[in-house]
Image (cartoon, rainbow, N blue to C red; front, side, top):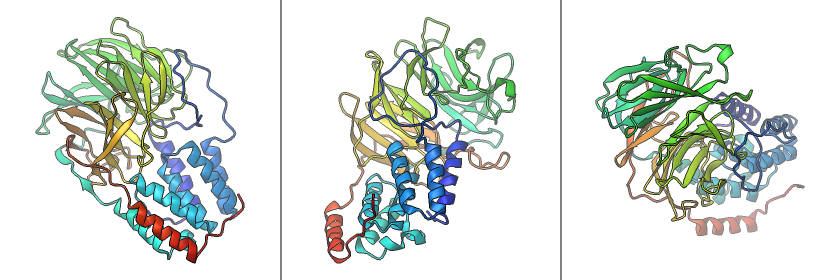
Length: 475
């Protein structure tokens, strides 16, 4: 990563987060959140909100007040511990204050989490360069950006499949179903890449942009989460913030009914879904930290969980017995929801695992598979859970920094393979996007996440301490 201006990068990072599909920002509470069945009033902006801290950091850097700059970055890292951009900027902040050991420690944390960077590309790190410790850890960070694992191309979607966002396997048709944002279309796609349009948003079916598709073969149902938003061809300001679950006959595609989000005066975006063992459908809201359920024997959506810790929800998965559900957040990681006890807490993960920037998340055989496009490098990871399903036991990278990866996003499990979008059209200007490629990765490869040679690092660090003690600034 080349650093031309720390101030510019911070602002660019804020803008990139804001440009993601309805990504929200908020604070963090250290206590595990309790699940609630009602929607509370929206809280007032906190004094130390992420946007406010970014503004403060940019202002401090512009004034060369590096102590204030570092303090703002430290607070940002506390609020968003998996945000690799804040971690990188914190290394630079320490370097600007000649805080060598603190900079090295953060670099090592990044390396342990499998993150990639190159801190030799900015003059801001001159004070921490030229040492064996820096060279060693920085080389490891650069190596972390090398392609590893495998993702085999399956087919390339035609150019007129505009902004695909959802993909699932339809066992009844023996084809993939692909949903799009731009036209609100659903296509059937064969393994050979042959495409057939099945549905398109209209007044008759009540669809807008398509965000997820769920196939329920036993009940002959096709479920679609849809929302009105800029980027959808039929968008009108009057429909801004509206979202609904669409129920269709799986075999005939006949429209059955529309299940709108209950009116509460707030914007909503129904996103990813998971099917419970009894036919209940659980849906993550991307605009607010809410999870809805559509009970199998009822027609209305019900908000069942307010996950106050969450910022920008994406993937959702569930254990086969329906007791535990997992909700992924791009900033906060993965929430474990005990549906019987109506409690929620963050998934326990090792310190060497960064669970930020998740889009798609899927579960098979007590293993979570996460697609991370909000960190560097972009990757597909396998998380083996313990017997309780609340803690990550082991970690395995399946595909990392592959040339095909340009914002990989969502997928679907078919057999022992994950089929997923290798690139996304959220990047680029309308009309100039690269066609989206669907790739597949095997889920049962024997790989382990390697840890750094800590003994060698600590030995070099101790030697550096003797030869060139770090000069610490006032805290």
